[in-house]
Structure formats: C-alpha cells, structure tokens
Length: 411
Image (cartoon, rainbow, N blue to C red; front, side, top):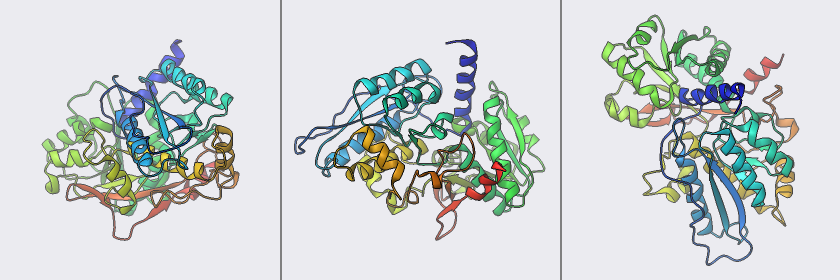
C-alpha cells in the first residue's frame, strides 16, 4: 500500500473510533453457513457479508453474527421463495487489500449480492463489485463510495444525515451552545461540519469543535474546555467512556448527548443506571429503539446470543439490509445480481416493517448533492437514555427527515 493510501486508511480508521461508525467490538473468526436447510428446496441463494474481525481498530464481529442469525431465522421461516439462503462470510481485517480480496471472492462465488457488511475500504471493493454487476445492499455507511457508487443501495443516510439530525435534536432540546468532543484526526472534521449544519438550521449557534489527542487517557482538560456550553456532544465511539469518566470526576453537570453507539446503555449502567449522568441524554439514531415492536424478529433471531449487541447500529443496519434483500428477491421470477439491481433501481418502495420508512433508490429520491447522491433515506430517529436504556425521546415519536437541511448545501 502506498503512503497516501495508508494515510487515508489510517484517517478513516480513526474516524471509526469517533462514533460516526457506531459501536465496535471484538470477537471470533468468520465462518461459513451453519443454518439448517434440510426442509427447503431449490438452489441456495448465495450472498456475502464482510466485516473486520480479530484486528485492532473497529472490529465488528456482530455484523457477521447478525447475518448468520438472519440466515438461520429466514431458513426456519421458508427461506427465500422456498430456497435456502446461504450466507458466505469474509474477514476484511480493517485492511483495504483484504477488502479487495473479499470482493474478488464474492465475484468468484457468483453471489447475487453483498448484504449488510462493514468496511472503510469502499474505494477498493466497490469498483470490483460494480464491474461484476453485484449490488452492495445496506452497508453500514462508513465509506464514501457507499454514497456515490450506482451499485450501492444504502438503507441509512450515514454521517451527513445522522449528525445533521443530531444538531437539530440538541438545539430543540434546549442546547443553543454545543461543544462536540472528537478525536483530533482530519477525517473526523466532517462530523463537526454536519453537526453545525443541523444546529444552525434549528436556530442554534455553530458547534464548537473540541479535539482530543489520540494518545490522551485523562480528558480532564477537555472537560474543562467545555465550560460555557449548554450541551456536550461526546462522539468518541467506544472511547466515549474516557470522557464520561473525567466528566464525572469533575462534577460537571452540563447536559450530554451523542449519536447512537457512543453513550450506550452499557456505559449508562456502569455509571449509575437510572442515576447515571447519561440519563436524559439526547441520542440520535437511524432506527427505532430495540424496545419498538418493529424489532421483534431481530430480537427473536438473536435471543440468547450474548455476542450480538442488538443496540449496535452496525448490527441493526445489517438486519435491515437483509430485510431489504429478502423483500426485493421475493418479487423476482429469477434471483440474479442483474435482476436485483433492476428491482432496486425501479422499486417504488420496499417495506422494512417499520424499521425505516419505505425505501426507494429511484433517481427522483436521491439527495441532490454530488458524492452523496446514493443517499435516498434522509431520516433519523430522536432517542434518549431513560432508566439506563435507549428509548424514544418522546411518546409517539417517529422518523425525522433532514432532506431539506442537507439539500440546502447543494446551493
């Protein structure tokens, strides 16, 4: 890998830690299909999922585990038009070269789609998929190529949507002066930009951008630097606990907030549960909270598997991606990569059972911003931490749409 590519990859990996890329973990090795398919007939419908495992940085074993849980669940419920779903897996190891190998494997195996998945190396894998005509359905939204390549069909709006919505939610909850705390890497600057776009659209001030050195272990100076803010937005991913620890030690009472995957139920539990300083925090997500009945199949399919965090945004996105794939595939007389792309390009809307609004990727629904024109779903959800759990911010809440906020940037 040349130096410029290595710098880009390193920056992107650091961005993953900020929380743009949602909660990370670590876990076991990728494996092939293990679902029982004896009662199903027909040729297996092959798809692939890839994700980094057994690696430093943003390991996401839950993405693979979620895909395999969906495989087992759908095959126990009739499969894909009566044929078994077969999920092939690949460990891309947070390495662009390995991500490229995963894409090459997808081509060699003649999969009809890559579904879900998590990889920062979109500039390496998307050209391979595009050349082979294989759709990339519902990636986690952590790579720029996912929002620009015509063979990508994202189910969420990624960083632009969630942070623009988050800025609005913070201001509407009373935060006129916001400080965003994130790691000091160039790739994370975009977080502050979209946070400001959302805050200003709701009548707030531009967000203060507070950078944290990658090597910092005591964040007392950063906590002190947030004085004068109405709210502090903690966007440090799984390292958000470092800030919260220093925040508690300082006795600060400034309201906290973040996007999903940073201020987690686990962090709330470890800092006092219902009495945690995270209680009442404004949390913005892509989907409803897992207490919503729309997640009942996901919860049933993953019940008892402690290695799958059902509140992890990457895992949730993978489940939604498989729902989209299944709904699209059911409409096809013959399921191929080509017919899938045609269906996704022309569908007036695919239902995800309330996990998102109806999804479409027609040209008329694209966000009119160059480089972001594969974003079609511009909605987010306004959540909070209540009694140590992530719930809807208000009774009767639903999706909020920031299309107009973002579209204004195109002018």
